[in-house]
Length: 65
Image 1 (cartoon, rainbow, N blue to C red):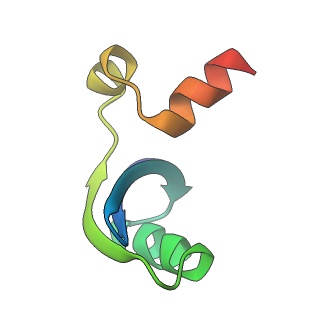
Image 2: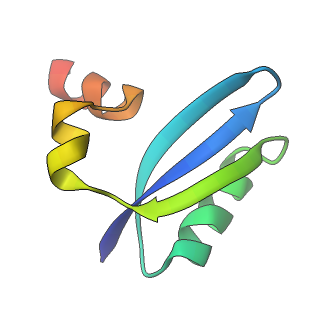
């Protein structure tokens, strides 16, 4: 499976999450099921090199755990 980064907006807060899915639409729908009140701002394929240099909150928490 491919890894996608999904950008969400929850009230006044923005968040970027990384998820594995078959395509971008499924990645967006999975995130919408978990956060029905959120607005999806973007979906893109994860950039491994760039995401390692500038990790999202979810990736930072995995490294610390």
